[in-house]
Length: 122
Image (cartoon, rainbow, N blue to C red):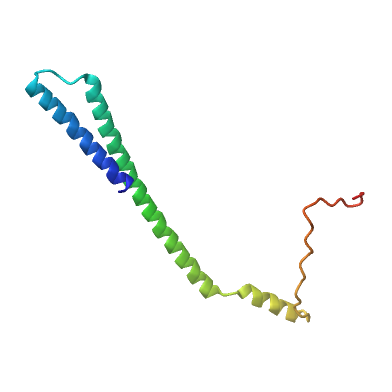
């Protein structure tokens, strides 16, 4: 059961108990339920209703964000498919126009986790 439906059930039960208790007490004893009990039941029903409303808004927003994310991923995939790797061709063409061959540049060696001081004692 999701949070939204749990809040709806709590609100319905709380409201029903409040009304039933007031009706039964008035018809049997002629007395009233204490105000604190009525306020507690009304506050519980109101809070649960508000929680259900916010949970519904959250579900809708989550659905819209998911749809937007899927749309953006599909659109970016289309753009990537259409564009290809044009940078690589541009760089190779530039190098060939300059009369040079493209060479693989080796990566710099990784240093260990310790600090290396230049020009100082190690």
